[in-house]
Structure formats: C-alpha cells, structure tokens
Length: 327
Ligand code: UFG
Image 1: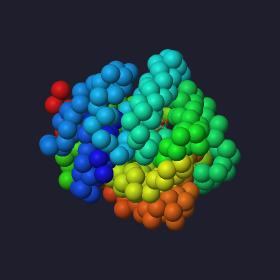
Image 2: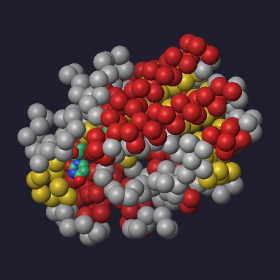
Image 3: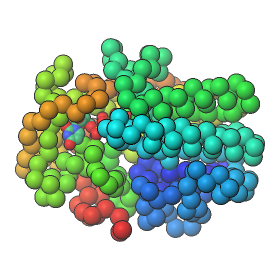
C-alpha cells in the first residue's frame, strides 16, 4: 500500500515506518519535526517537512494517491496537557479532524490511529479489556478519546475504515540499536532511569510509594516499540471500510516502578540512585492490558515479554546515543 505516516519521525512513528518499509509498503513521512528527528527516517523514504495545520500542504500531499494514513503526530505529555489543554485540543483534536477532512476529500478510507490506555482513566478492574468504560482523567486522554468517537462516527457516516490502537507504555528501542527514544524534555521512566545510569542525572525520583499496589509504586504494562510497530502493520492489513475498531496493545504483564529500576540496575550494571518523591498528579496506580482481542482478531504476539529484554534494547540505544539523535 501507499501509506502516509504523520509523525513518522517520532519515537513510535519511526519504528512503524521501518516495519512498513520492511513489509514492502511505500511510505511517505509527514512531520513538522517539533518532536521528531530527521535522522529517525530511513533513507529512501519520502519526507514532507510540514505542519498538519498547514492544510494546503496536507491536501497536496494527500492527493498523491495514498491508500492509507497512519497518524502518530500528537502531543503526549500528560502534565503539560493539564496546564495547557488548548494546545492539546488544537493539535490532537483539531489537526486530526483537519486530516480526516482532507482524507475524505481525497477518498482515502484506511486510518490507523495512535490511541492510549490513558483513555481508560482509573479503571477499577484488571487486566483492562477494550469493553471497559473509557473515562480519562486528564486532557491528553480526553483528546484521544474524542478522536476515537470522531472515528466511529466517520466510519458510519462516510465509510472510513479506522483502527485505534490503545498503547500501554511504549518502551525499548530497535533491536539493531539504530533508532530509539529521544524526547526533550524527557519525562518517561525508562529513559530517565537510563540517563541516571549514564550519570546524566544524579538520581531518579520515584513518584509515590503509597499506591495500592504490591510494593506501593505504580504498575505499568511496558510494550516494546517493535511489538507496537507489528500491531500497526497488522491493523493496517485488517481495516475494513465503514468499520471502526479498537485494540489494546500491551503484554498483560505488570512492572512496578521499583521493579523496573531494579531490573535496570541488573541490565546496566550501574548503581542508579533512586529517591522517594510525592505522587505525580494524574498517575493511575495500575495500568495493565488484556491483549486477548488483538491476539485473537489480528494474530498479534509480542516478542518482548520481560522487562529485562526491553531494557536491554533501550540501554543499547541510550549507551550508544547518549545525546539522542544529532541535533
Ligand atoms: N515515574 C517515576 N519517575 C519518573 C518518571 C516516571 O516514578 O521520573 C513513574 C510514573 O509516576 C509512572 C511510571 O513511572 O507511574 C511510568 O511513567 P511514564 O511517564 O514513563 O509513563 P506513563 O505511565 O505516565 O504513560 C502514560 C500512559 C501512556 C501515555 C503516556 C503519555 O500510560 O498511555 O502517559 O505520556 F501514552
């Protein structure tokens, strides 16, 4: 297929671009590089350096005969979304609606959407299935859920085929060490822990030690970015016109903040000082996927099911790229 990938220079997007190319698809990346990196896009992939809000450029790009769009371009800092909700509604909602409108005019009816477990808010039961209530607790989650609703409505109204993948915690790096995670500022636990291992930070703060979890720290379901990429490929191949569907993408295995730090100490053979800190606002105690639906309907299987092997790939990336991509 001829696929346009928005945000294809970002962390998850770039791993998906590589997987699509490997599978023989023709890929064009559309990215404004506000968070992505030119060096993360494989050579030979067409690159359009533009903003989604630039509807002229977007319309010209999409009239090149695409059969599908994968949409990664979005803001993802939960704390920032609380402070600046309109920034999130503008990019994650208004710009995505603009994209869908252009797709409709160009008669492109396949759409893979980056959604999130943050749309579940603070679930009462675990593991989380797709049919459980979606009740986000922050603007970031609201924007992603709003788009899931819009996609379901567009599927009914004009035959859009759309698949929302609800990521749990994207993690790790390409097995060959060539691409990985590089956010500025870095807020996610694994890169922060590995920056401590590299002595780029003095310590990692453990946000909250009194959660109702086995060791009192938050439990997350870390999903390797290459397994996420595989889920996108399968989703693309299984989209049906007029149908909206959503899948959890997680392993179903929980790791607490303390367990993750301990595992990182083993993988890196570094001390990694950690201190207790207050809870971070907006963090649910536990997020754990039930991946049964994506396994049974799309035949997806994660290759990485233990946190140690995920951390090894992340460590390989951070060790060899201590300052991320060339700036
Ligand atoms: N954490 C720390 N110290 C840190 C950083 C994180 O203790 O320095 C803790 C957090 O409090 C949380 C866990 O580590 O309990 C994981 O935090 P991350 O920031 O790595 O990831 P999140 O769980 O916050 O990820 C959430 C959702 C994703 C969503 C993402 C957007 O689970 O679906 O926010 O940034 F995409």
